[in-house]
Image (cartoon, rainbow, N blue to C red; front, side, top):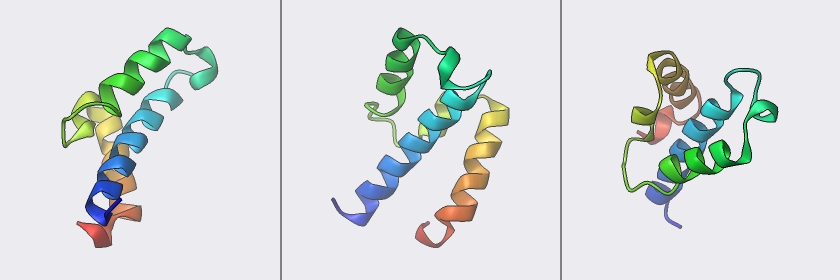
Length: 73
């Protein structure tokens, strides 16, 4: 996997993780919900997975990207 593909995957995984941490975390998410969101985000062909997040979670996503992937933009 090249660096560009790796960054795309990280972005998708981070968006998915942000969704799973909402409302008391993944423990309270039904397996069908988890799978639905996983497929929507991780398996999506969309290059900007943050579009699946609300405004507050988009801010969290942006903060993560600025902290950890800033040098890769």
